[in-house]
Length: 160
Length: 107
Image (cartoon, rainbow over all chains, first blue to last red; front, side, top):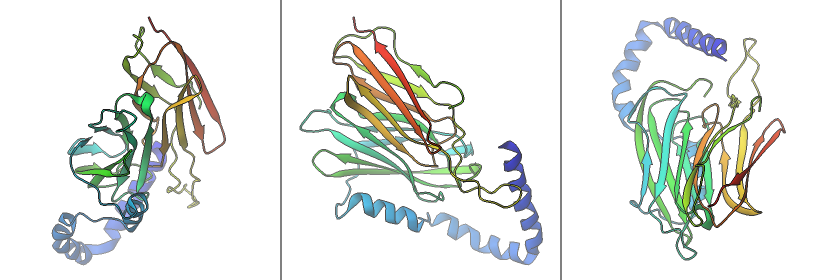
């Protein structure tokens, strides 16, 4: 795995060298505004639409705990929590974790039950590059809560 | 899974208590996006589903994608209704299923 990672890095390096100075200057001139735009992949938009249907998510009541800056995109700790009494009348059915710029938008779906007791899940994810990470909670009344956090990634997740 | 998963649960539980269950599986989580040295696509091989049931009742489940880091760590909560056995299951693309059963020590 490590060996394949380094092969990929070398290839990218070769490509960058081959691309030439002209292309590099052009890219640099354009890079700043584009990087700020918070690009969302077509797959992310489709995944979000499929989850939401016609519903409009509300902000608040949901927290996405993730570092603002990460050295290595292979291993990013992430904690999702929703303020919910987790009763039969009012509970969280699922929490979806989405990436706006990974090759695959759907990172994970965590399904909770009344036996969950508490709507909190911790995991570790991969990030291919700097991007917004999105958490979407599906509540028992059919409504949604959503939050997003921008994460700056120095080295993208291997194999993403 | 090459090595058995690690599971961390507090040693004694009061009936009705909400506890955290921490799990760590051993799996490289091959994304399916990488190519080998010859340029051939390496097929996806991940743990795609994790489930937790208590005495036949669903407690928690997760559908995982390739965006979950290698050696998937999943920690979740459970309201323990009483003594019983918690069954944790990991399903892999390659067809392997890993099942671990933990007897909850309710005092």
